[in-house]
Image (cartoon, rainbow over all chains, first blue to last red; front, side, top):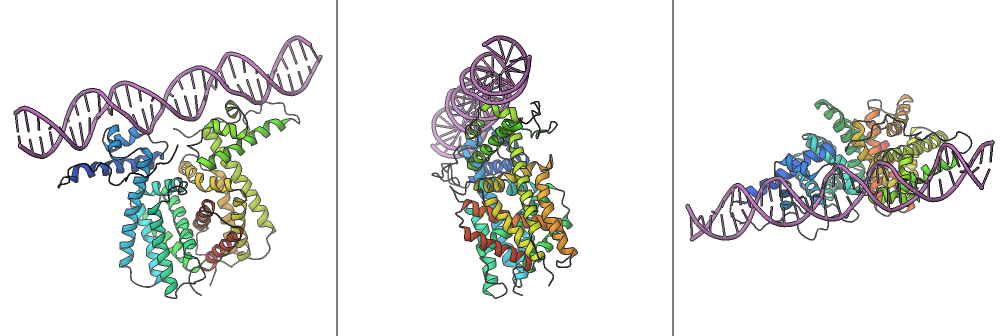
Length: 218
Length: 218
DNA sequence: TAGGAAAATGAACGGCGATTCATTTGTCTC
DNA sequence: GAGACAAATGAATCGCCGTTCATTTTCCTA
């Protein structure tokens, strides 16, 4: 199978509708499909989910999906970007509100990452499992929304370096990936197992602490 | 699709052959198939690889694959376990040879993880991408070989704690996952991009350093 | 309220690809 | 070298599922 080419904009497919105040119905259906797809993909994974299952999950007819998305692959990517954008927005929003130095900021970031995603188990499952799948074709089409996520983390690190709180012998690009990897793996475990709310706090503290100060005794 | 049930042992399928010194041909073909599958999966991913492609990659007929593996899923799992076992063995072997305290050991571990896997690009791609796929069904069948990998890391941490070098307020189970996640994500980036040999050294140093001492200035 | 266009429907199609199995090839024994 | 058994082959099968499109429904406008 070939991955989709992005010659036509996914975001605005079928803009042919009247422009007035009635975008409502249309966008809402698109949203319903994305929501249904998330639930379905989380349950069985992309390749084991039938389009007809997504449709019934979304409460629309099979064919309707093809009015909003080019094909199943396109739906996967659209869903991924949609959710990633949501995460990025909320992450940036919350980060702005955080007072204090780098330590607080990183702690806040880790906490947010966990909370945002665990807020919705399906999202957690989808992100942790399908992201890799899509990383595979980052080669051909570099996932911009995931790139944006990493950028946020990277900027955070660079700020810390600029303010002198952080060592500056570290490549922020590599560090941001390492941090994401650590969070993501722990998140995967939380997603698959039964995580109680207090576990989130414990893990947040533990991870931000070790990232800041390391495993060694000081 | 349902994931395979493991009622019949995958390892020893078709033991009906004579027991003498002629296991040779048989095992060798199994190996050829596993090798071919690795190449194929690395190139296109599990779901986009046709069984016939694996067969031609391995230089056997399509049907032959079914003499050694129950089905395509079984082949995936078998391959995964085979390679994971190889990694675990070599990792343990190398770790035993390492002198010094925890710092040296962790550094060695990180280095080994990178080198072992990058020694074979296909393996790197396969592990980083397909492991998640299989983590998905850890729910139904807990991947023992990956568990063993984590155990090695976990023991390393616990040793460090016992000897007093490491903080003991850290859960070694969670830490081992976090470390694996960080390594794996950085490895993914290395796999997809073009990594020069010296990059491996840089990243090894950077990662073991940050894991030991954290991002903060001391 | 008629007419027409956009949106939605879901039954049917068509291609694909995992798996099977009748046949061939190889190997060992007497 | 013939018989018997194991191993390998690959063409044919068959069920599945992504996608299409003829038809129906909805919704607007005059």
